[in-house]
Image (cartoon, rainbow, N blue to C red; front, side):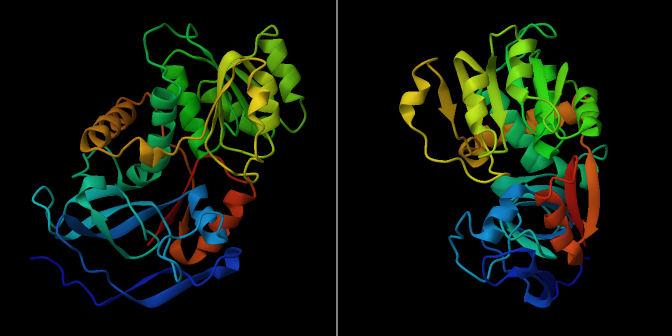
Length: 336
């Protein structure tokens, strides 16, 4: 017998853009009602991502305005379904909106499940958004495929390589045979990046990143740069990228990149991209392709998911502070 669904729930509400103080824990929010093709999921683990901080601060405007419940991914249990593929009791993970809550209405087209027994709910929530981001950046944006042996592929540089997305990029690039250079802040983070498969690491706190890249590549530069840092690293990217290379800017951890004079690209015929995950998973075929490949990498342990810390939902402000303060390695989760 299905459990009775309450009328109200707990969750995090943002009344207006701002600092972590605008993240308000509420216990009297209405439980959402689902439409055809949707599921109602009782969340267990909720992923914390930089995009959540962008919506909190107003860097990314909310299409629905305020008040806002943010959060883009979670795992949990289906409690009500209006889609034939899912039933109450199914353990699932999803991408959607309003995940910072006890219950979320989710489109079945953005849901994975029932999850196999060997994939925990914690791993599923930690892997989905950042894992799909890393996988599509490597395979779609950079066009790197596993056709070569280890270290026979292109030169690749990953910034913030000990973070959630960065560590996954390093692992996937290594699986694909790339020659991986990783930057990170501090010796401990560099060691973690090396453990994940980076052949070379650069401590951006104590080393000149541009000079080290030139040294490692014998002055050639790197074929592709994966930059989730943004403003603080972008100009250096244009120096480090090789002739006919690609700079993939996918995040704003240090602030958004300043407007670019396109003539700067001509000296080395550089390509610059600013891709977003959701543009790569528009069709059902794309969603199926990339989620299948991601979870196969996880099941075969070619890619391992590292969780930095699991925070109670009420401590979401601490999670955002830690993430923005670059104090973390791996994935941050909230738990109900």
